[in-house]
Amino acid sequence: MNYAVIALAGRQFIVNEGDILRVTHQSEPSPKVLFYKTDSQVRVGTPYLDDITVDLEKLEDKKDKKVVVARFRAKSRHRRKIGHRQEISVLKVKSISEGVKATKKSTKTTTKAEVKPEVMHEEGKE
Image (cartoon, rainbow, N blue to C red; front, side, top):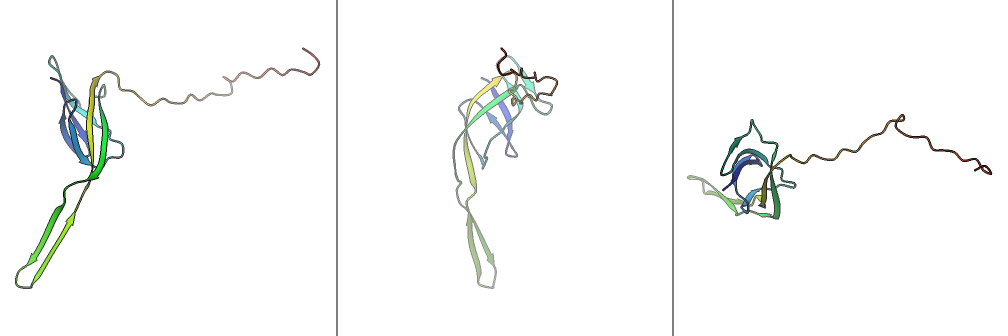
């Protein structure tokens, strides 16, 4: 049984493949792996493990359960009841993989020395 401990949205989660997480709203979730365990090895990051990736799939964005706040002041007939629903994202752990982390492809810039001049053909001569 392999699992990982990830840091996401200011919290830490222990995740297995197929787990479902409910976190505060994330437009693009990017977890950082702190700990990874398989049947044969245990790896601890200092602070993160860059070669372990946890792929998350966003299932939906919705609002969480309502939190009710009631205020009361004694002997003054003051009562107030307000509520709030926090926006959350529901995420599913697709896979936990080991290997080199994919980096963004950088566009190659060329200098003038690398550009070959075009051959100019004169009209009438071939």
